[in-house]
Image: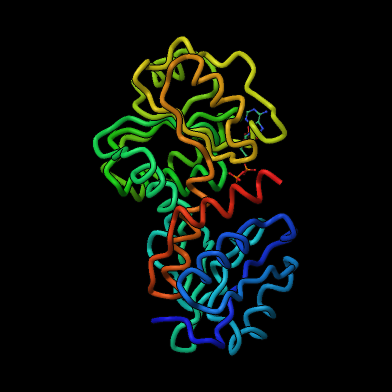
Length: 284
Ligand code: ATR
């Protein structure tokens, strides 16, 4: 249903000042001929319930950034199955006097892979570095898209193990396993990988992995990073030197935003225009 002129959209978080969503969303709304009215709203942890009550008649919907993605879920009237599996919501729609929760992070990552790199994970083997919320969203989306095997590799192995067991219960057709960031199990996973994804915060502030066993990675593997600042992270730089195809992190941000906008408006936004608006802001 198209956004009416009075409908307002927002991103909430704590902090929220850093959010790049308004830049992309307002560019897309303008382009669709809808009034650009996407704002940042600073909401503290204890204020989520009050926020929902206060904004019930005002907002068409909103995005959620850290640290509220998990805490918002139980406060909503209905949550779609994929968001329930992920255990977090990043998009909320007001519909029929109800708040409905979605998660476009995983689907956004998948769309970026498919549309930016023409990569379909069906039947393939994937190694995900990290075991946080981003890893979970991506693992669920890849599992639902038919990935054959997903190895979750994390510095703190017990976190990878816990996540792996949770995912196994709900995505029975996928072979899930876990490892640390070194050792034989990790090396074997790398040698069979069609796709290697970094979902850790390594790469932010130009940090990099120490002693990453690149020599074991399948030479045909696509290497993907969800860190988008810098666009070419040290991890992607190293992958490129080793002649791997690479997939940069801004794609996930753009596609998750585009899917959110589609939920709120029923319209498909111009992805490349959103990407340009984002990259312009990142270069500043
Ligand atoms: P998010 O929810 O955004 O995915 P998170 O829950 O804070 O983020 O998790 C961050 C991830 O980055 C974790 O998997 C973390 O590993 P640990 O579980 O061992 O803490 C990973 N990470 C952060 N710094 C790292 C580093 N220097 N080397 C390897 N992994 C790192």
